[in-house]
Length: 218
Image (cartoon, rainbow, N blue to C red):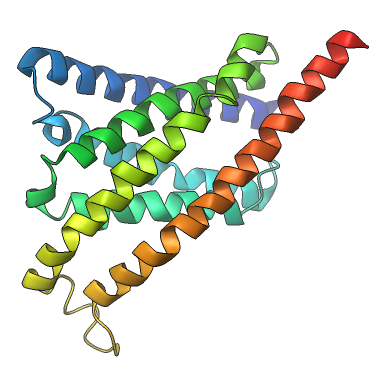
């Protein structure tokens, strides 16, 4: 990798680390200050929407080959999260105070602080072993927490609201199905697509952690 690419990735991942750290601080401060999960979206929602949109760069990174992730898996993760936060949560005020949104945002923020910190350390060429361990261990709890009681439960609760409002009716007017129908299909497919990503992370965990262990024992 060229020095320019390395410097760019270091800057990008450091930016995302700072952004998600700030998001986590906002969520926790609101929780402590109000002794309630109400206000989670108001405190951190706009920042999370921005950071998630900016993460499309990771799809481009894979496409042009400056990272080895490829395109499909980053696109699946980016598409699922961006649809969730922009098309559903940001659009429907009725959802923004739900516990499931708090769970999602908290899990996302904690996971992304670890993930982007690990990437930034790796770009610097000096990633401590404890950071690698955190990167490939914290996801075991945070990923299913963010997806199950977080994203999927929020989308399920959104269904009657979407049906009542006939959300995105104009956009779907030329199609033989509504956005409500589309979201029901998404809900059915979501666990299977997510599980593909989850298994991919376990394969990465095995490769990264056991490789480091083998080097130490060699």
